[in-house]
Image 1 (cartoon, chains in turn yellow, green):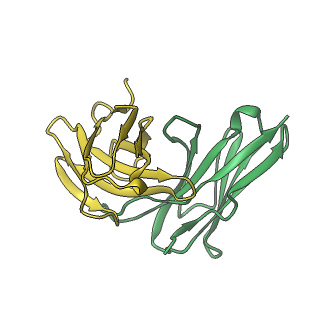
Image 2: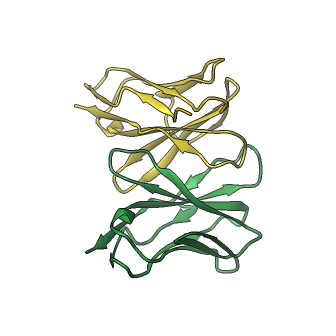
Length: 112
Length: 113
């Protein structure tokens, strides 16, 4: 069974631009969540989607948004990029509530 | 407010010895806890979990201990192997369906030859 796939793996953008990251969950997984990882901050929760509905949201500004499609694939969008948005963005899917998360390898975003 | 704390940013252990990674939490509503391991340039992978009704869970070389009264859990790896060098994240999950997983900041484990 294929794992969680995130594209692209690496991305370089300039301040003020916007970016869209994509995540394909494991087949059959309906829950998709997104995390931001920065040095010293660990994994910070962005949002979670289940059956195309945002079920939970972390403490990030409105520039960070996401959506989930009917095939469970998810995208996250960051508008008006800032230097501090440079991070590894991880997507994870899970089979059911209280099931372990399965992470993709992440998209490393660099904002210059 | 950090609900899950991993107070040691890094830890070095000799190969073959026991590695003990610690985690403290403040949220008494956590229903179960998980440990994830992360290599550079890869996403975290699930390692082991423990329900709040248990005090120990073992899987091969990995054992997680939970002390609810102290709000403390630890991951023991014995014997430690070179491939165990990675960042380890502790996480807690509440009992409600909408509760999100809260991760600690991670501990980087170095296994020394």
